[in-house]
Image (cartoon, rainbow, N blue to C red; front, top):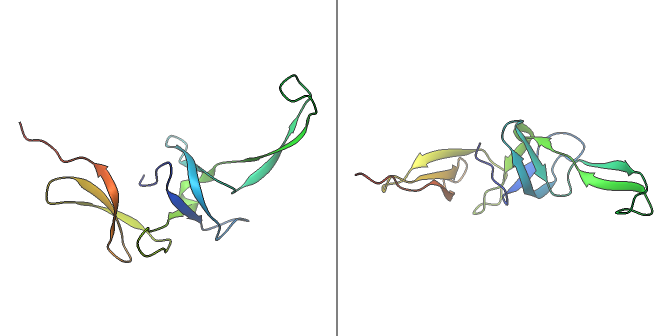
Length: 112
């Protein structure tokens, strides 16, 4: 998975289609991402000492990672991303539309 916490993504399907937001959490085992201000639901909360009034709490729920496209920093378009190796052996993400690099995934390998 090329999406990481802190990246900007655009939702491609559902009620929040076309919405851009920051990734708050990535669940790799379930294949889901938690995006800021996307897929909001109401959780009904009973009165307690932490929440003395009770009521409805609005919170974000995870979205399938296949329904979110990473937004390129250089061209500003939601596009697919690939992985390529640099000359020093480091791995980086790159935009398949404009070809610009978008951060390293792995550091260069050192030869013993």
